[in-house]
Image 1 (cartoon, rainbow, N blue to C red):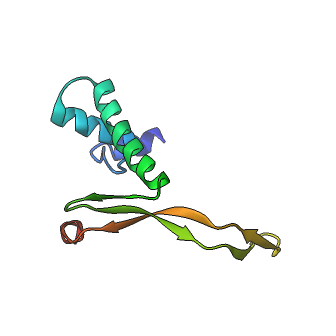
Image 2: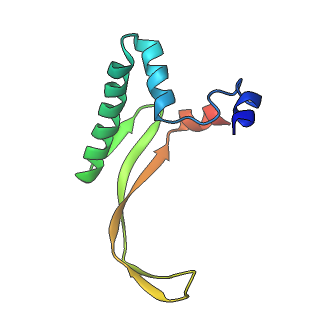
Length: 105
């Protein structure tokens, strides 16, 4: 694993995770890393809270987070082949804005 890290040390941000987001927020806002982490946590908690209430969060130029109702269904356990009932549930959904789609092309 150490050899892998040395080989790809120039690719520090190969995978974007919460820690990398916190670093980037801190770089833009300044302040402490703890302040940046609280800002990132507040963003995620706000989006999660709104989805729990059944609402949606729209960020212009980025996309729309929403909660979608998934109907109850019967699935199959791939290991045993046994039928399993999956209850109805709400699942998060994200629709990318045109600006985001164009930026990723």
